[in-house]
Each structure stands twice: as C-alpha cells, then as structure tokens.
Length: 306
Image 1 (cartoon, rainbow, N blue to C red):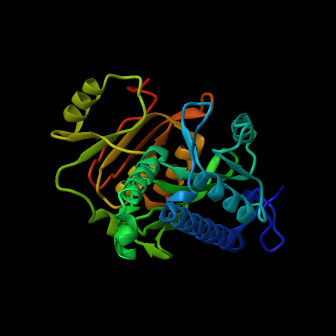
Image 2: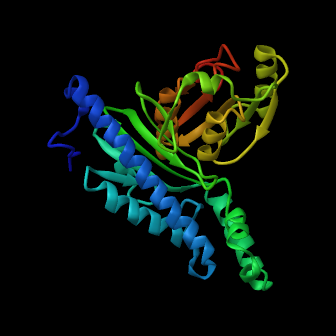
Image 3: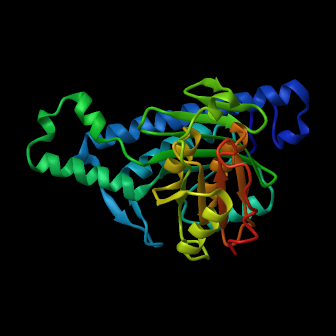
C-alpha cells in the first residue's frame, strides 16, 4: 500500500521542492497526532487497572492489553496513508525485509519501555488492592502513571528514517522531519534552545548490551571527554527524550531493534544532534546519540564498539 497525501505517492524522493516539504510537514503532524492519541489511550487504560493483562512473548519480553490496543489504534490511523509495520507483528522478518528493500512504510512501537510500563501497572494494582487508589485525586493518579515508557513512530523511505514522533506520559511529544527541524507539542524548537539545555557535567547512558566491557567504555569516555558520569538507564524512547531535553549528553546501545533505532535517528537528525547507526544485522543495529553542544567529538560506532 502506498502513502496517499494530496494524490501523491512515495517514494517522496521523487517529489520535488515545496510540495515535498509540505508533504513531509503533513506526515510529521500525522505522526505526532497518532502518537498522542495512542498515549492517551494507554494512560486511560492504566487509570482502569482491571482492564489490563500482561503476557509473556516468545522472545522473552512482555506484552499488555494496552500494547495491543495502542497497536490497533495506530494501525487504523496510519494505514489510511500507507503500509504499517509494528513491534507487535508476529512476522517481524517482514520489517527487516521491507527495510532492506528500501520500501516506504510506517514503523510503530506502541509502548517502548515495557518493563517500566509494567512497573506502573504493578504500582497501580497494589494501590487498588490496598484500597488507596480510589481515594486518590485525578491529579495524584495521573502523577502515579508517569513512567519511562513512550509511543514511537517513524516514517521510512529507501532505508532512511525521514520523520518521527515520540510521545511521553510527561506531557512531551517530540516530532520532526530530517532537514525541517524538531517540534515539541506542535511548536518548532530552535537549535539554539537545545544548546542551552543540559547539565554542567556530561552524563552518558548505556542501553542494551554492547560488545565491550562497561568499565572499558567508561575509561574510554573519560579519556576522550574528561570526567563523565555513566548511568545504565531505561528504554531508548525515554533516553531519547532525556537527550532532547538536555538531561543526558550521550547514549550508547549495542543492539537496538529497528522500531527503536529509526525514530531516534530521525529525531536526532531533525534536532541537529549527533547520531550514528551501525549496519542492520538480524533486525538490530548499534546506535549512538549525543549532544554536540556538550561533546564536540565522538566516534563512529563501527570502530570501538564492535
């Protein structure tokens, strides 16, 4: 199925000038709106904890009824415009094949940060069992459901992530188009605003296992950048938001899946931040993201991490 906007079809590389820019702007708006709506549904599902179930997936991960509901909502909204693939698809090899073929498609992760999301569910259920939940105000409940989980969507063409959106329970929705800038809750951000973000001391985050000892990586960072604090934090969506907000300076992961790496890559490029993604092997790749306003030089992921 092809993307259909104002009668035009992808790949958008064949659409020239202002019309292409207008189309990409529309895609960004579609992604942001879809991510926000899915997140709202997810939060509503937490506020009614009896409606949520948690199951084990074949790959060892977990999936909740909220994942599946958000997945269905996103597919219904985006399938109007083109092909949609999801983390929740049973045949995930189709995603890798579509990427390797250079197809145009939307790629969604209904809930990135399943462990953090499940922790929120457990907290709510505990409060419910203790008879405390119902006595909480709406504001208290909405504060409790905040966690390190996000909704992520990317639009791809010819092996490139051109646009993306990430929505968080913190009330932040970042969206962007490569070459057209980054937006927060619908308002364009200037690169200068990102330059003012961040901590005085750079903080690095390590994601999924990397083919390098953590202590060795810390020593390498210290040698390159001086004193640096290294933390093992959460899922990539939450760390991407921290990077965009200036709360961390760099993020390294050894094996991000496509639905995690590609939205992050597009938003970093839209924001003018540094990003390097390794070759895709079995649907995964190395990913390095950093804020060049904090760290002036960085390495290619193919050099020290493999």
